[in-house]
Length: 326
Image (cartoon, rainbow, N blue to C red; front, side):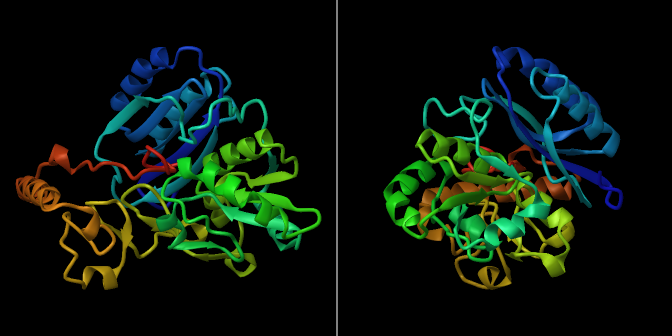
């Protein structure tokens, strides 16, 4: 776990068979609140997914609880740190899928591609027969990706199946013996996408175990094939090698990453709009966001937290699709 920063952040997921996730929700939410943990956890019949933050001791307590759930002893957890609490409250939500692909019958707990450890990832993607695909959303890819990776330019993870089916022939034609390697922030989207490819009849499929976050944590920068920063679905916005905090900020209207150049434009107004979302919003939206931002500022002046400060999550890893992290 993180030893340098006061807040421990845990990004976690596990594909597991939950017969009645609605029965798991109340005790999990109760424990998180008792321990002062904040963030979002998703429960579905296919498992659990989320990102939470709190003291190291509190996070340890929640992780032990989740690992005691059916099929979750091997829960995938990636730890990092933050100077301040990156979430405003705690939510445990019931969902149809813990990451939304939108294709019935895809079950990573039953059939999935080959897991590749970060230490073996460079050798795989250096192979000329490997077709490397970034399964994240377009705005995430814009901050950084692996050298030579294909960007599907999807707006949400649920767009991936249609993109792959449309481009399958062209992708497969790149090699006489193509093998598909996929990656995402924390591993959940690329794991589910390999299950999708297996269901489509493709056998030679691989994905980065633990995702980009584990790769950045374990692989020295001078050996890394990663270029740029990695977007994360909380107030840290992005991280780099060694999971050091990046230099991006967040537009609190659209939840996309922005930089100093974006904030210097006329289209940027804190909490209301940025160049990436200005044309997507109506004047009514901007009036509503302006009122919310006013209430946040007033609450901050009083030394309080305005409940409206908790913003809608990006269409994600939460995590990429209906979530706020992976």
